[in-house]
Amino acid sequence: MTKIALLVALLSSLVPALAGTLPTLRSWADCNIDKYQRYAQAQAQWQERLAALVTATAPEHAAHSDQLMRQQLQLIEQSQLELEHLVRHEPARLHSQASLNTWLSPFDAEDRQFLAARSPRYAELLRVGKAHQPPHSQGDKLHTLMREDIMKRPDFGELLQQHLQAVKAIEGIQCPALR
Image (spheres, rainbow, N blue to C red):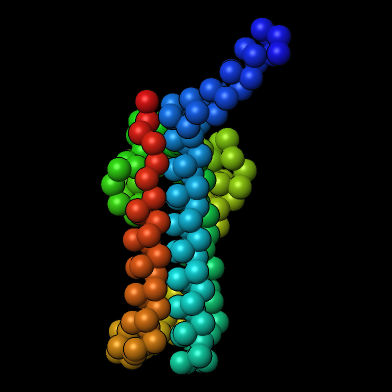
């Protein structure tokens, strides 16, 4: 084996070992984006399952339940875009060592305007979210049904426990420290 071939073989064997021990900003960013995406998926799944439970329990509230679920899914997508912005452009502002539901607490109205100017999808989500929708005619009845019936059901408790367990597992994902 020539000296060059030996050197190439030695360097090739060292690069993967070094790459695994030296976290980079990119690996921190990718890990935290992936972690938050998993959280967002769990949130979306919770909303979808809750809407399905409401529809199965009280079909007369299906349209309103679906409307509320769609609003929540838009907010979840909006939060994913906010998270990606913070990770990519202002990582020090992200509270990634805290509970997932507080990661975006530093994101304010000025940040929303800034991101909306750079992201057409985010601007659209903000526009739709701010559009005044009159209260649903069944809104109060659905809230009462949720409080007095659905939230007391064992199947609601099971869904909630599944969701909380999923979030706990996601929060257990360890990402490298920001350097």
